[in-house]
Length: 150
Image (cartoon, rainbow, N blue to C red):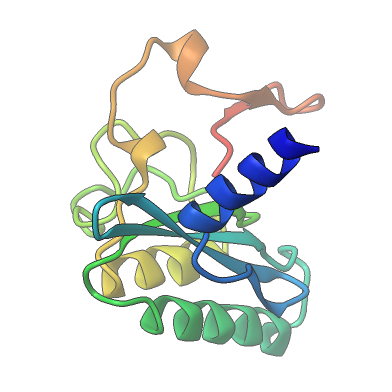
């Protein structure tokens, strides 16, 4: 029983407040990592490509509010399924994706890339160069095209 108490105390040292569910698709968690540095993680599950525009706008509005509420000194890790492919348009989105991005952009990509640019977020899986067989994470059964998960 004592080890459970010690574990609980260590967790409360790292997690200063409970995770916050913004809605059913966005959640935040703040962690103390070292000294006075904090990391805020945001877990997301975006609406599907065929969702109505107002549903997509609501998701990105809620995500924007969550990002805007994070203190400037916090590091931010944005994770989740955005149901998008950002494509290779590095010239336009150079602040969000690198030259090593893959695939063809879809309809949701502008929403995500705009949000990343507004909040100075970089898509790490589109920055580093990988061998082709490591770069892509799944292959479409019918088209046999390889895709990078967001």
